[in-house]
Length: 366
Image (cartoon, rainbow, N blue to C red; front, side, top):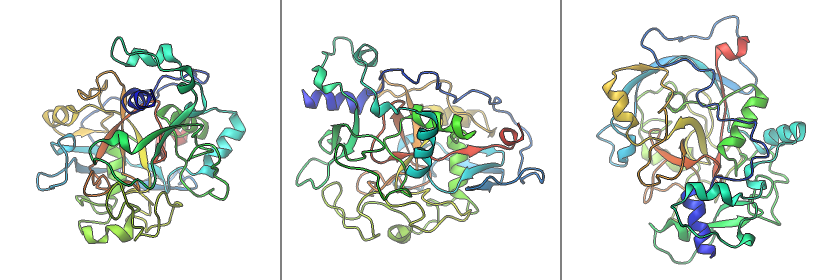
């Protein structure tokens, strides 16, 4: 039964009680449609840089992986021309301290803290899927299994565990806490949770195109946030060293998540755009989206697909996450590369998924 629930979690965990349902998916709200034309490059003089953020200049660039990248997956191609207006982005991932302030002020309850609603969950599963025991439908989240001894690398259900009681305040489950970890990135955050924080902070999540523009910074075209030298990886990003997922040799100083700003910033002064924890974007995940964009020529401010499409997970609605995490290793995913991305169920969190926010000139002028 536990194995069955784990499959639910990995494939389609998402429908929990809607206590906070007023926090809606804002991925297309208050946004203009894609267009061809001029872009905003420089920050207007009448708009100040918000505390904790950096200005990302508007830019024309090639989004997606080059054909010469041997580590790129099909979902990262074809490369296609895009442009984005300038915008502001958080210097770091949202921290436990930031999120705690939000929760204390609003009383918000995260998805991982709410009971699972089976009637909603089964709508996203194959017809006839049996209901697990009620004891397995308690609040919780996905936690990476530590200190594994043996497993098959491509059977990822072996290295993830549905942990009852795991949430942003108890990242490893009951008995754990974030005490003394104010500057760690907040984790076990669903898309809905991230959206709720954005509404409170007057921000939004970045589009995938904005995220890539920020990651490239002043070095467009690089495979990594620092350029193309893979040898710098262990010194410039929190990733997995050693045999994944059995043994992590913390050559970079951290076995799992690290406090923000533990590694050098990219050329724009942004920290952890590679590794540490994955980051939500506002784009739906569609495996065919890049091909559709390529057929349109250069698109300015692409907003992502109109709806999700993942043939490997047809019952789930998924968003794009970027940046990789402390679990990324070349032997498996190498997702610390700028073009790498993964699909993530809307209401699913884990102990290696967080977010950062952006603000546009228009948002700050309101």
